[in-house]
Length: 289
Ligand SMILES: [Zn+2]
Image (cartoon, rainbow, N blue to C red; front, side, top):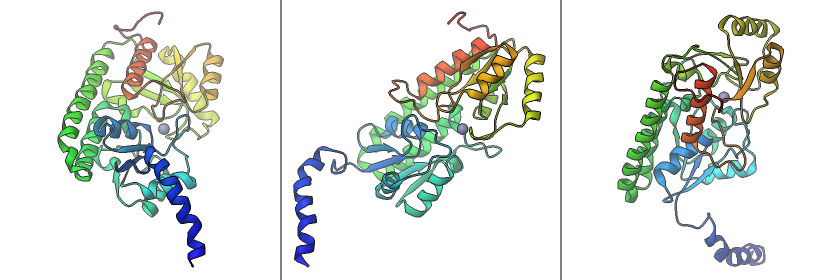
């Protein structure tokens, strides 16, 4: 019995001081976020009072992401898993089976038509932020004041974004936006209509009939731009735009950061606004940018 224990015990003693430098033994509770916008919320509110891990790595498309051994272990070991049911079915299953404690943000953000992409709407993001702060304060009550202050800052960032979208998308020449997948529906609050090439998940294939309808719509409405994405393949959007002799530009669904990106949720939201203003001929658009 002793012989069988000896090696692991030795390994633990040897690794102990090393591990203390890293995340595992920092003494801070680990909070796992299932994809980037939730990671942004947790980091913005918790600062460095918790160890934040994102199960969906930069550059990985979150919809069909399936947790492997490492991510499953992270979900099982976390003090709290913050996720949004309906976006990542495989993560939802793993959270149900493995998580000790979880917060399902989808319950706080008033989803419509089963559309999981709530975060493109800064006011739904604000509702999610309130829910995340409440749970973090329960998890780590010693830092409750700090979390309340950080939430206030975050709410003003999100409200500023809402105001920028409201004024920035007023009086545009067009209101129709052609996108790759159906990730932007919640921006309808700013008077935009969306014609996605594929459905709620980027992997769906559009039918020839749907593509023909899109072409008609694009010509009818004088659409200048077909938007592709950052992480999912731009092939469909490029083909459509090329066939019709119009432009492509990037509209980021902010489902994840690209590898090495220095952007964050707020900067990507502002870049999206500028791209929408330019494509739709809005008064405040920066010409030639
Ligand atoms: Zn999506």
